[in-house]
Image 1 (cartoon, rainbow, N blue to C red):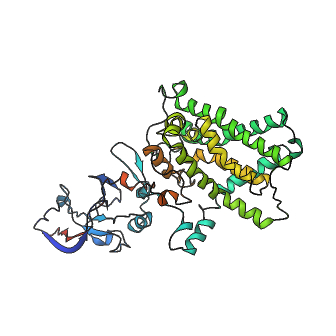
Image 2: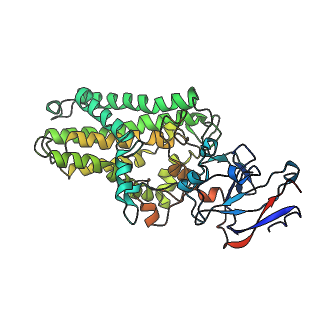
Image 3: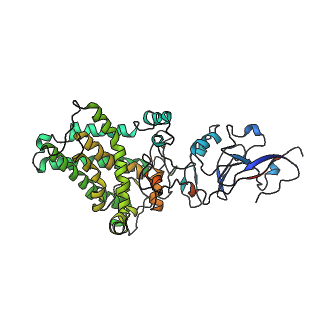
Length: 431
């Protein structure tokens, strides 16, 4: 209920949209969590209030803080509409409020971004060509940095560490062990590197870490009573083995001309287009295979192992049951029927093996003082709530099939009621 303004106030008509809300603390532009709203107090002059507010986006409302009048302050509460977005946050905090971009923590200490998760701009409706091109070409975006990084890793593995196809015509221990050792080394360098940076050196501390707690030690639900050791065991012993087995089978089939082959020199456009399509194919396959593992019998005996990691770390991404690894890496089987070069297979396989580490490390990017775009709040919400966000942010499959969770309800549990019209009370310090 709106409190009655004190007598020494003048009034301005306003349109009040109840919580979720933003407000500013006097002179500091620091967000606070108060009664399920993010509240900031603003100095008494309107000229110090954030600029760029539109009536369709936010409204100004009066609220009473104990002691506020003694300080000759007034409070503006900016009530966001039902679908609050990061674009609106940028408009509200136009004057470089970097602290607000760091989000805030709930009563349980869990970090939440100040914006809901959203899908990439490619599939906005109605289509917006400018936004789509910006996503493809900008940093961070489709090409830069991560897909380019994964492609460079793929090319390095193909030219320097993958056995020549001429050696792969028959199953022999030499080249098979080369594949496994190369993949194992890559997994340790990549996933181990993320763990070293964020969990051993703790370069980020707990800033922008979804769950403030670190990995579990002494917990009997994990192998060795240790979450990290458990995750490394399943990732390396099962995950790397299944990944390498698919690769060995493909290289043998390619060497014996049992799979359709695609040459760069003969079909350069198709070659490049198929490379660009692979991240989308991977996400399409992941959505459906992931939903399948949530089928009750599979979840009970297979997928439960991965979901022991409610507070995941980099090694949690590939910590799965062997049956789930077979299902998860089966997305590379498309190259047995669709014309491909071994580079396409390796790119797909390495995306599948490496992307889980930055997707599970438990931090929201950009990290390291805004220099490193990484993290997946989208997938963290899946580990937090289980029955949502089965796919990723490239294809809006969760939205199509009613399993999308944007994280906004983690800040405000109820949808706001209908707008009310009232007054904005401003303290007159001269009274």
